[in-house]
Image (cartoon, rainbow over all chains, first blue to last red; front, side, top):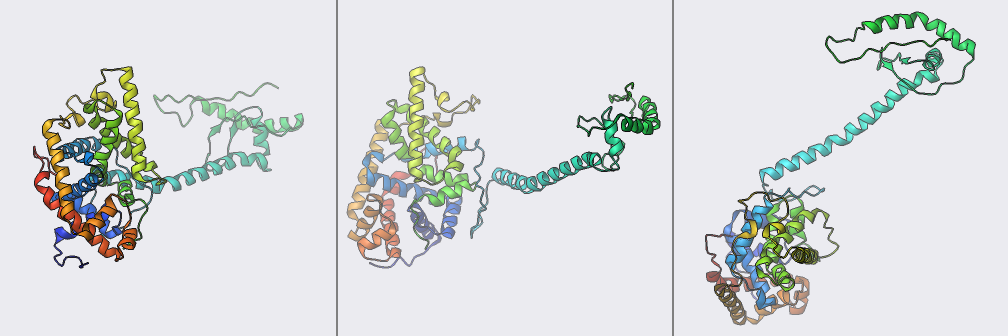
Length: 224
Length: 204
C-alpha cells in the first residue's frame, strides 16, 4: 500500500482530520483543528456531511437522504439550539489550539466560573462570622464578668458589651443558671441606674431617625 | 496518535460539554438520518418524523451534561429518540390533531417561529429519486475502489472495526488504515459531490 498522498494542502489536511475524527481516531490537537474547520470552512462541513452520508449508505440504502433535507434539518435545529443555554462541563478545557466560542457562551462560562471562585470563600467567611457572633453574645454568660448581665437577662433584654454588638439591644430566650433571690436582687440594684437611663434614652434614643419606621423599645422592670 | 477510544464520539461529546454548541451540530449531521429512520419506524406520520427528531436532539443537548459515557453516545441518543417518539405517540392518542407546536415544547411562544416546520419533501417523488440516486452513486463508487480501499472502509463502516483491528486484519500500520479510509471516502465523495450541492441556498 502506498503512503499517504504527498499533496497536503490545508483543505486536504482538514478533511483527513475530519475523517479520523469521524472514526474517533483524531488526537486532541487534530480534534481542535477539526472543530475549527467545522466552524469556519463550508467545504469542511460539506465533507463531514459527505463522509457521514457515505457511511450511512454503506450500512443501508434506506439512509440515503436528499442533502437538502439534511441541510434544512440542521438549519432548523440550529435556530432552536440558539435559544438553549450553553452546555458547560465542570472540568477545564486544555487544548493546543484555542477555539473562539460564541460571545454568549463565553459570558455564561465566565459568569459561572467567577461565581464558583468566590462562593466558597464567602460562604466560609460568613460561617466564621456567625460563629464569632454567637460566641460574642454567649460568652458573657460563661464569664465571671458577665454574670450580672446574665442574671439580668432573666428578667429582660440583655445589653451586650462586645465591640461587635456594642450598645445593641439583643432579645434573648437563653436559659440562665439558677440564682438565689439575694443574688438577683443585688444584680437588679446594681443595674438600676443603668436601666433608668436606658428607659430615658428609649424615649428619644440616639438611633432614632426622623420619619423612620424604627420602633423604640423600652424596658420595663418587673415588679418584685 | 492517541489510543483508540471505545466511543468514537467521545471527543465530540466532550467538546459539546465544554460549551461548543457547534460540535453538537457535527453529531447531529452524523446521526440525523439514523435517528429519523428509527423514529419513522415508530411513527407512521412521516410529516412528524423531522419534528420528533428535532425534539430528540434538543433533549439530548439539554441532557448532555448528565451523559456519563457509561454507554456509547449513539446508544444514549437512541434511547432519547425512542422515548421522544413514545411520548409523541401518547400525545397523539390523547389529541389526534397534534400540532407541531406541541412537539416543540411550551417554550416556543413566538408565533413567527417555524423551527422544524420548514416543509420537508422526504416523501416526494423527487426526494425519493434523489435518495435512490445517492445510494446508487455510493455503491458504484465503492465497486470502483481498489481492493485495499474498499476493504478498509467496509471493515470500518459496515463491520464497525477500530483502526487497530483493521490494521490487524489487513496486516498494515494504523497510519495506513487511516490513510486508506480517508482516500476511500474522498473517492466516493468525489462522485457524490455533484449530487450533494444543496438547493435553496442551504450551505453546510
